[in-house]
Image 1 (cartoon, one colour):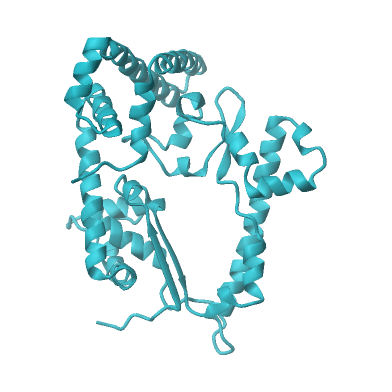
Image 2 (image 1 turned 135 degrees about the vertical axis):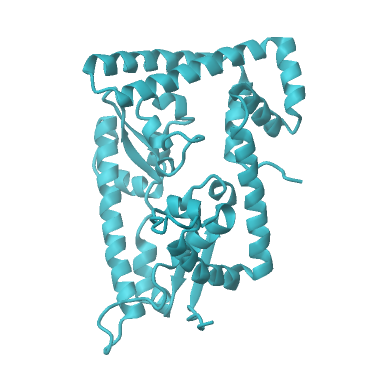
Length: 344
């Protein structure tokens, strides 16, 4: 086997719970070949740039502009569209906080408020627009500094192009992780790598990428620890598959039991005794109708039909929020989605 070039620095971060749901952003790779990034001249340039707020503008269907977590663009509930798209129509149903205020508390916006006179006096929408434009400029500066770092990391007097010894290491590591987790065919679908050979179930292009990706993962974690991580993620993936096979009410009892460290059967019995089961039944019915209204809105080209679907969706989301406000168990169950279950 060809010897793999050794980077000066390799860092791999895997959010196992999100990766198990097929979120490719859950796997991140940092790799460097020379110490340009820690050079005493370049390092302060990178460190001086404030991190972005972690939030992005979202244009809602009612015309408002709000801030939403950047992560929403890569997250989805079940098999539906990304949360970022669903939230355009029913923002309040997805938002668990005032993300605009959270963005304003970030280091970047603190800098804006320090430098831009009377920034707080501008409208909410104007502030959001300025925050986004500032984030974009910071990212362009960061990209420019990164380009300089890449030049000094990969190029040489006899090598004009700044080409790394291993091309697209992040993609190769993701290919290895998701192939081990779900198989090369599904990994290819997630990573946008076409499955060209229809005579084989396996995605050959992805399979070739996994060879380098797996070696990087084993170099970083060790073969035994990487195998343990994959085994744990497979357990999470199986849990999600199992949960999605249940009826919606059953899903909520499973999530509530997960949050309370009890059992779905116990939570259901308690709910039947105190009336929560009836509320949950109505909530499920409202959510299902809201999703149908969303689908009708997206599918129809007729303006009147779209408007009716939009109005219906708004009514249903209001009712959903109203029901959720009657019992803390709704929030407990929905919050439980954010963390992995115990597989012991």
